[in-house]
Length: 70
Image (cartoon, rainbow, N blue to C red; front, side):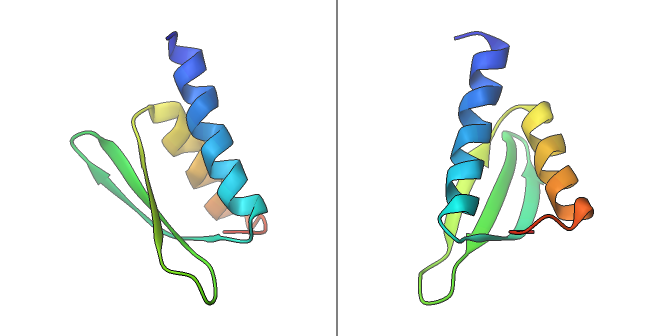
């Protein structure tokens, strides 16, 4: 899988959770990339491990832009 394909896959997973009504609760960097935490009222917390730095930048842009779901 190419680098871009991995980034696109991670981005699709994030966008799917946001479309499903989840909000980004937080993000924690670790040695394997970052763990992103999502929350939806009435649902349990969802976690997504991302590897690519571009994906972490994408999530940071969502958070700081004030986009719905952030």
